[in-house]
Image (cartoon, rainbow, N blue to C red; front, side):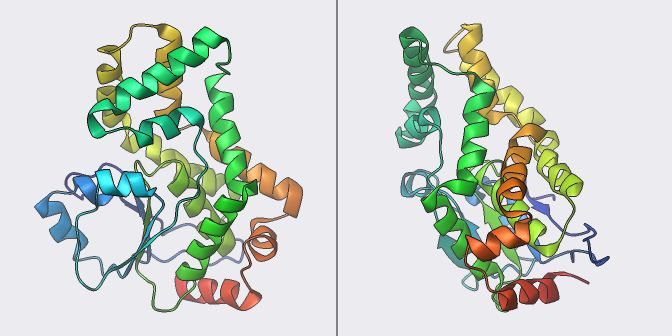
Length: 268
C-alpha cells in the first residue's frame, strides 16, 4: 500500500478460505515498523480506521526506532517473541550506528571459530522456534486474543522489516481463518517483492564493511524471503497438531468461541 516512507505495508484481505468465504479487505494489515513513515505516510494511515497495533519488536528496538503516532484512537500492544538468531540478537542490541558492524563481527567470529552454520539453517531454526518456544507461544497467543476482540479492527501487526515475526503472526491469523497453505506462502513471499530495493541498498552498505563472500551470503540470508522459511513453520504445525486451528487452540489457548469470533469478524 502507498504509505510513504514504508516499504512493506499491506492489506491481508482477499484470500479465499476452506469454507469458501473470503478474508475482508480493510481489517487486517501487516507492515514494517512505522518509524520511517513520513508525514504524508501517516496522513494516509489515518484514513484506514486503524484501532490496534501489534508490535513484535523488543524494548531495545522500540527505543531506537519508535513508531510515529497515527492517532490517539490507536492502541499499541508490544509483545516480543524472543526468537532471534544469535547474530540478529547482537545487531538489535547495538546502537544505531554500530548495528551493521556488530552483526558482521558476530558472523566473522563464528566463521573463525568454525561454528558458523549454513545461513539458511539459522533462519529455518528461527521459524521452527516460532512454533515451539514458550516465549513465542505466549506472544502469539496474546496477539490472537487481541485480534479476536470485536473492538480490535482494523489491526496492524508489524516488527522491524515485516518479514519474520510479522510473517509468522500473519500466517497464524490467516491460517486460523482457514486460508490455504499455498496462499499463506504467497502472502509471505509478497515481502520479497516489496523489499527488492531495500535489500539492494542494505547489501551495498554491508559491502562497504566487508568483502568476504561467506559473510555477505550470511548477511543476505537474514534479509532474504524464501518459501522454505514460512513452510518450516506451517509444516511443523501440521506435523505436530494436524492443522493451524488445532495448534492455536491447544498451544496458544484460543477458545472455539474466539476462533469463530475471528471468522465472523474477518470473513465475508
